[in-house]
Amino acid sequence: MTSPLPQAALDQLFLSARSRNAWRKETLPDSTWRELYDLLKFGPTSANLSPARFVFVTTAEGKAKLAPHLSESNRAKSLDAPAIVIIAHDLAFADKAAELFPINPAVGAWFADPAVAELTALRNGSLQGAYLILAARALGLDAGPMSGFNNTGVDEAFFAGTTLRSNFICALGHGADESFPRLPRLSFDTACQIV
Image 1 (cartoon, rainbow, N blue to C red):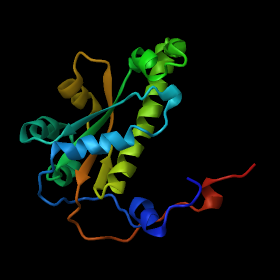
Image 2 (image 1 turned 90 degrees about the horizontal axis):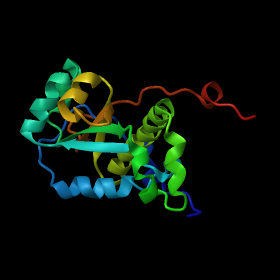
Image 3 (image 1 turned 135 degrees about the horizontal axis):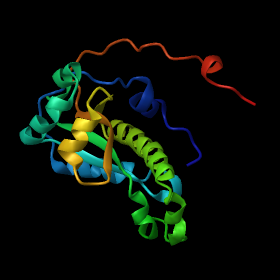
């Protein structure tokens, strides 16, 4: 792995990809979501503790349960997607330390402080959510990530009585909207420093 990816791969992952706002009306098999997870799970996290949890909302019943918690604009542009994924994180992720970091099973103790556990879960779960977007694009899917939803409502509807908390959501499928110009990005000199 010493060579850069070809230009076509960079285009598919970053340069030509867009967050989608309309979706081809299709049903994708559950194997699609399994393949996606089996790719994204290899992205690095702190001590390999992988706090993200993913709920692939694909059924009419699941979408009806989620819909009231989406902002009006996100509701209109998401429900036709084959899947709307709730990217959550498990505040009790350290319970899996012995399984996921067997070279030091005691690593779970690093996260005994609830504030440390919460920050670690959010940070690393967000990383895993980004891996989801890139893995989806790598597999030929489009993504529409968004934060316009009621976290408390989603947590009550999907995670009541658990240690899971929603972070953001992402519609997945094949986009049906027209391509649109890329919005501006900050320049290197504005966003970066070399020290």
